[in-house]
Length: 472
Ligand code: IFM
Image (tube, rainbow, N blue to C red; front, side, top):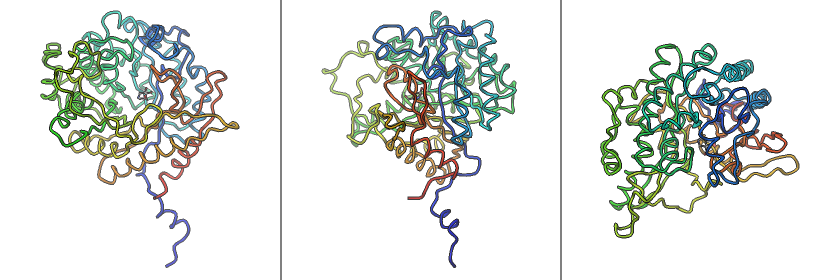
């Protein structure tokens, strides 16, 4: 039998299941700008950016991509690409400037306009409540290391849900609590820039408690809504088979992955991680009942994946700095060295390892949950240049292509993966790196605010149109 060209093409494609979401993601502080407009209050990132030496070249999110004023153009861009779901975050200090107390109606109205425009273009809004911009007054009161911040977060979640719950049905509590806790309060490379191991561990707990309280309240108020959290997970490997390297991998996997997955999905802290942290904290901040709240059932889990960590055994004791002198994102395991394998890296110096995404998705499904999973961020920074009005970014295209193939393999292996959100729609403010790292599918000229879809954006649009990739 001679097959038609259409059938032949079909056989040459790897197709994603019907209903698979093709998304892009952004975050409020990274794109909105309008930092002092319409009643927005200061966040810890406004303060951090103004602290000399914290953010490259003193960059700030004051203007960013000016999305606050240009959101209609950005929604149109997404519609032109065929994006079916948009993951964005709400700026807490824009909708509740003091972090407690009254809402700022003008701030809520902005998100209402954004969401309505998305829906008018057939794009499903996926709202994240916390992508790192804590209202400064809450940090002044102690920040995430203080228990009260969790309660404030749950109130803010409900305030936002009361305003937008009639038009948004996908709610994510936290984005990457590891970063908020361990970069914000451990190494201090993120806002608020504190370098206190105990505070980092406490912050991690209270972030999860806030997630649990918010999830409970949201689900009680709107049982029909989808509610989940997004964690950033890594594949972690030992450099060699030696017991020392294996222990280093156990420690880093423990802090990066299991510190969050276990409480949120099993209702307990991993005992080996608690043990690794015994010189840092006795976990007295954990109260009876907290873990049950943290493990409040979600309806989906978001996973952000970028790279793999390869680690080795620490140097012998005599050659080490005492742990309390090393500001670190890895409390209790400060001495573990991260090893470079010499494989290709992105502009962030992150090793490209799509096998790690497959490994991570399969692991979460096999070891933790049969909840629907979403890759809520994945993408790469490269030093793109505009040439003759165009931006060619073959490395980013290849990065996303290979990670999408890993997603497809995961689905074939039985993982209930239901969508993929590329990070990011636009080049944007990359935190301590300011505007020096470009992750966007769409190039942004920060002087003129002109947007140019890169070749990866056009390719992604074609993937979406065909609902799959060409088979290799
Ligand atoms: O830009 C960040 C984003 O805010 C959170 N996840 C990782 C991205 C790249 O570093």
